[in-house]
Image (cartoon, rainbow, N blue to C red; front, side, top):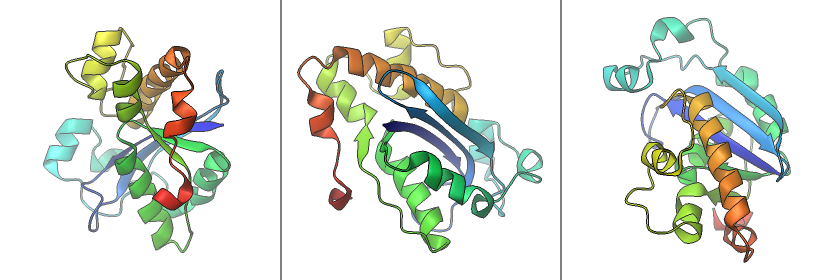
Length: 179
């Protein structure tokens, strides 16, 4: 099992920045079998740069659930699955930080689609999600929004699975104790 995840935030992982949106697609290695998506109220201002980048405004999140309201669902949908993201350290560490603040331990094996793409489909000028999707003709609707980026990462992940004739993906999945 895999969970392809993308988050939008008010800033970087370090410090007080909070989540503003989360999307998770649970994947059995063949297809998406479950999903979860919501805007989140970060309980703090969204910086102008982030508002411009994501299009997420304070008005959009004022009535959204708090992360505490969805934490159990995040734990449920990711349980027993490899946590997959494009630049996995960012998304994983952010969710781990939010869960730690609520008193939950959060450990999952992880897979980075940036690093895995470089191994399985080398030679592209950029491995940023937008440019790689453009190069591979993967539709990316809703750039810099969690659901759009996560849905594109699902398609990229499926392409990587198809290209993995030598079984690289199981070998590049981090173990829990590597985090």
